[in-house]
Image (tube, rainbow, N blue to C red; front, side, top):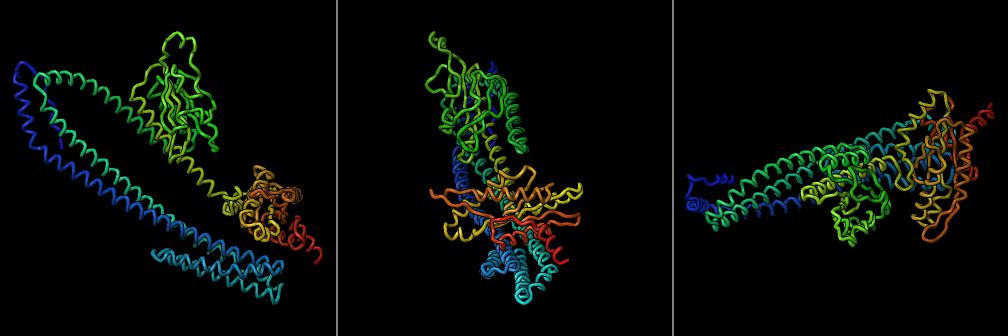
Length: 601
């Protein structure tokens, strides 16, 4: 609803301003009831849209949860299949009855997970078809493993030869490829659902904000109309002259605010493109220095432990110096989670990290005009850092509002950057041990091996397995087992070089890739790792467990034709020999193979 143009200033040719205003008021009086009804209708529409939007968000959340269930069940199917494969391989290599029992007990889990995956994807024909394909390939892989196991029971030598020519690796790669396809499709569904939720949220926000603004505008017009009717012509003339002066000042202020909003929008867009926290903080410092040059200060970032905030960026010249490091309890803004403003002479409510006021100046009764402003960086009810600003003159409210807007944008950017880094780390590292995961190993072992082969350098692989880990779990519980694995992961991170790749291969198995390390150096490294683990104890729930022992299999690249699969298989075979020879030892797969070759010769 368009507003009527403001009346022009009175002039000698307009002596009857009051009667003219009365006529205008009477003309607009007929629009009051329709405007009120329209405002009420808009508020009702906004309320209905809010209810519908909340229901839509709840439904979207259910579908997102369903996608995560499908992805989790898919990973469980692959993990269970690999467990069956590992148990069968271990039994063929060692003929241990417990491995055969583990193999038999893990088959139903693989079939159960694949069946559950089919049940979860009945709503999606494409995913349902891929799930059935995965179940079929899982059954094919289990059948092939069973065939090799039966052949091993009849003729171990023939079974060993058959395993070398078996298509098990191709079956597993095909199964993994189908699983990757299904996972990517489910993630695309998840992304589309998230995008749809964002669109609905944006539409709902626009509808709610627009409806409220329009309703409030109508109500404001009604109030303005009632107010205008109670004014007399002399007050109207006086206010008209005053309004003209205020209009000019408002136009100037509006132009300045428009420029600031444009800069703030540009800043928000640039924040979305920042790749690191340092970039975001440096850009924030430059923006504050450009938009409010009379202010100075710094930006603090809280450490992950939440016990200390350190300076990450500076801007301008501080009127009141602040500490480089501060404890969250030293700042009222971080304590309360709200903006805190103080004057230099107001010592009772000043933050402890700010410099103290001059006692001589305060004693003389001279008020210090300097002021400080602490704005907490908050997102999702979590403290991220602090913007600390100070100036030599009293601030304008517009400047304070601008600083708070910048703090809000920066808080969201910090959360997004931290979330992006967290997701990147989670995709590459095992959450329990902090080591790289098997996917990272498969992606990087090939590259490191090719690099070493081009330079004619050796590359060694260690395959490590915790001895009697299942018995440890059964005796002390899975929580203690997880604590033991986490401690072993910490030891491996301390004992490997920066260029080495330490991974959790699966369960209690670990793999270490040692680029440019020959068999002798790798054996020495493996012996140090074995001794460190054997000397380590853990404390869990006020109980001390350990020490634990481990068996390590070693394999070293012998030529340019070696492949990652061959190295891993050799190290795995050496690991099983170490277990068969009594555990708590290191077995070099290359040396054992050479001895066996000499014996046959």
